[in-house]
Image (cartoon, rainbow, N blue to C red; front, side):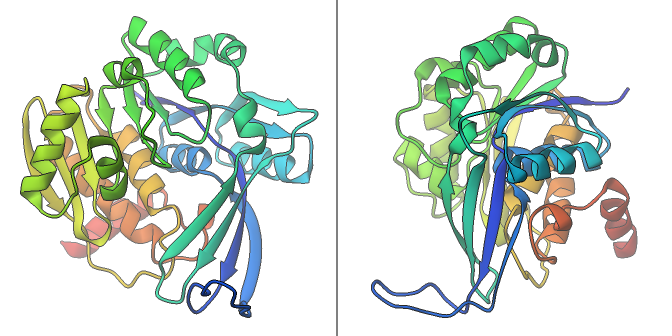
Length: 309
């Protein structure tokens, strides 16, 4: 049976600025190139799920502008259901400005735009898409009250919920955490929420205990090129990343989450295998430039595993 994934999240026009390094305060520095392409954490995660052959639906908003149409076209190209993406007439499409350094690392500034216009009424309108999916994924680039309402509907109807708490926040409603089946922060986001620095596997286990106290039973902490730690009701462990030459790390974490949503069994019985598969997908993403163009399809991930054999 085809996995059904609904993503509630952000749609941004990404402007990628290619630079040698981050400028110092007060410094003017030349860029090597600047390009604009469709992106946003929500869009990236949805496209990753869709390219892994999940039947994917998106709940979000764009502005009535050229960037909004660019994003709608990109989502439709990957066969994502865009019926529940509203077009705002007065607020422009969200945007992100990505400073990409020559070592592949990036720093990102975000303007929410239409993403922040999502309302409880929009969630009510998208109710069928939420209650009839297998997995609901959300991030923090849309209003928290909207995510809370979506997670309430999901849990009332037996839908598995995945929360990517990015960008990191400290003012998360306890109710939202109690409705989250699986939370997937990176090490910075985990520390922001738990107050416990992620330095080694022991501190990751401490984070897991803290998240359980906060109401989230299952945790994955992604730690970039090192891999990912998991702690669930079934056990804990660490799955190393694949060693590759990273060109651009943009969308690596989003690829991981979208792929995970498509591969993870809802009883979490295959969590280590699903993480390994998601790590492999992310390792392909970082070897290409840009977000959406670099997110692999299912066949590419399978071919990468076959090449190891």
